[in-house]
Image (cartoon, rainbow, N blue to C red):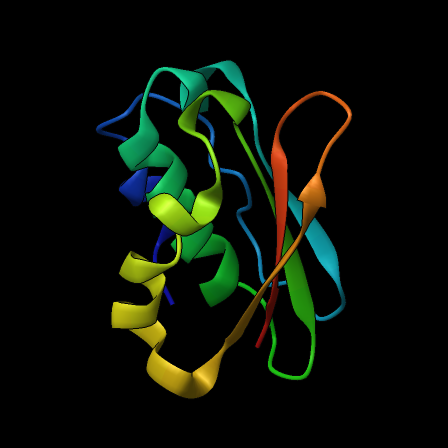
Length: 104
């Protein structure tokens, strides 16, 4: 599991999560720092999955300006997790962002 605090020292932001979640939860990747840094959004999406206990899921809510998450969010985590997680696009939010459900 990643050390979320040290991972974010270079970005100067608070991490999306700083603990392991044993039940379903939502990772808010629509904050202003995500709007300014797509790499941070992807990094924190991976950290969110790492911090989700097997048998549960996390819903990643992504920033709207980057478009559909299949264009940038699926490939890096697939390289990291392989077939050990299942990704499913849920919908576009009323604020314009997108929701992706990741089952661990």
